[in-house]
Amino acid sequence: MKETVEKVIAERIRPGLQADGGDIELVEASEEGVIKVKLQGACSGCPMAQMTLQFGVEKVLREAVPGFKELIRV
Image: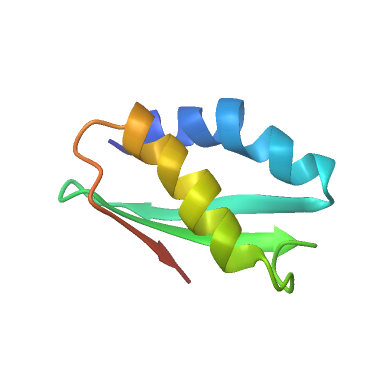
């Protein structure tokens, strides 16, 4: 699962975040479908970060990663 998540982040999520001065780091992707990420740069202190995670990152992961269950920000 980790390789799939890394690919999705690199190709579909990271470019949008980097365009706004932020980034995202994959901390962990468990076989149980729990994915832990850390927002970086402008995203780390952004008041809209939770919405970005829910309606951006989580939505893409649900569509692209079989077995995805939960996204956790660390």
